[in-house]
Length: 159
Image 1 (tube, rainbow, N blue to C red):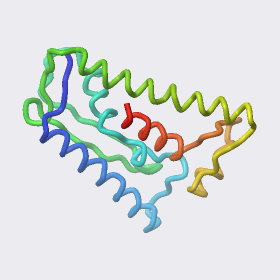
Image 2: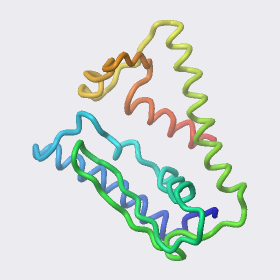
Image 3: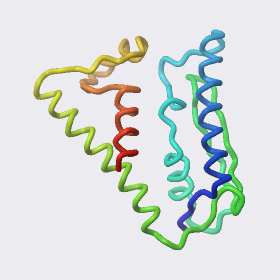
Image 4: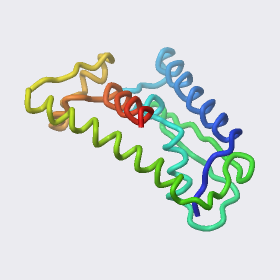
């Protein structure tokens, strides 16, 4: 099946993403949990939720629950209802375009990643925690963390 969001669904997902970002910040600021290992809230997009609906369901779907880890130990969930929040889409091209844009945006950013690698230049992370974990497990990314995902999002918006 191919599903797309209704306007209500788009708003619901946008509100969910904003809520995840705010809850993550509050949980970390109050010292309830850490966010050293996970920052899915800041990277979450409407396309991520839509892709989860389309990739995890092949038969008639009545509802979909999307779950995301927002800190190292806390998760948020969003339940979307068929026909209220998402509907079947007969045009495969709409789904394919969203998927292709995501991959193309990542490919474009990777071109710049390769150039920075050739020049031995790293773009520093604004977040000191991300910068501290940047080279864990032998990672040598030149554009890392939030900077990478923000750049992919900006490129995707241009497409």
